[in-house]
Length: 387
Image 1 (cartoon, rainbow, N blue to C red):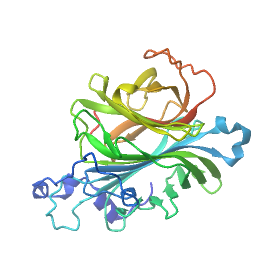
Image 2 (cartoon, rainbow, N blue to C red; image 1 turned 180 degrees about the horizontal axis):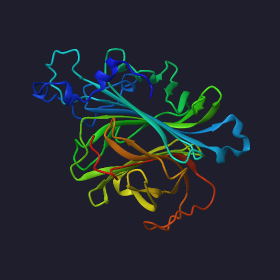
Image 3 (cartoon, rainbow, N blue to C red; image 1 turned 45 degrees about the vertical axis):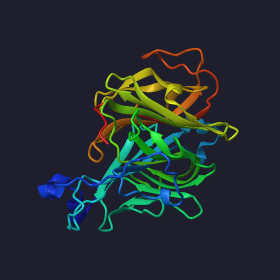
Image 4 (cartoon, one colour; image 1 turned 90 degrees about the horizontal axis):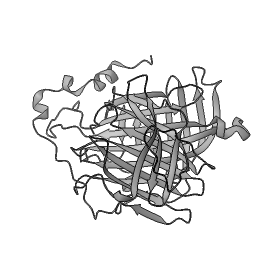
């Protein structure tokens, strides 16, 4: 186990064990997400510390230089998410140890040769040189794990775990996708059930991936394509909702699709939405009625017993996709940090028959050439997601 200082362990202990009850006497004044507030850059690349919850979420597909013609059969998936949370702490607490901001990070590598998701996680409170999230631009870190945006627009991602390490440059090749109405992204029927949300598809990845204990010997130059989401809000998940299904797909023709479906307690669509960029560069906001996620194949986790629809049909307006996972076991247990257990995995998008709706538990049988690749996230299948 990696050595940690006593100070780091102390600052990462559960909040309830550290603070007297008086510290929780008054809830902070979380700002609401409202429509008609345009995103402003570079300011909105940075953290929004007054809001309750925020994350920067990077997912992508990788190929090593040695893969050559077999690159499609030797693909890897990766993800790195940095979360910022403002706890329900009395702002008047004068203690420098009061955790006014918490930082979390979840990182993972999807390697079919390993057979299951390799992942790691961290948590720390802001300050003391351990963790921070800048409000000026994207610059978030927990110890030596970091995601930063350079002045030229490129991102740098650095992560090192006992089993793998990333040192990537992520270069934008397209304008961002501003989701919803100018960045105001609804997550339910009530106006305040919303977030501010933008995506950066088609990031070109270049860097070094290290795998295994002997990281110097197992270092490889990799290239690939990635997707970045940045989202912040003060609203909890709607009371009638339990979780969501989400995709971010980079299409081979240069297009991109973000689509999400929030599910109710019966597993039905509670809300949905998305943004589609066509091959010609035109961007279309998708209505809740135009989005549908249909399970095609279920996988039961040997780790938690949860059952996930790892193969999906997704209908998004005139786009009809069958999603096939890079591998089934891409479940992430982050109960040590964020408290959630979810499936988050690399998927390939194939064309789906526009006339067929599919049925649950049937095998996904894609036909034709792949249309693109991306990530599928499935939350709320173990227990209700608490933001």
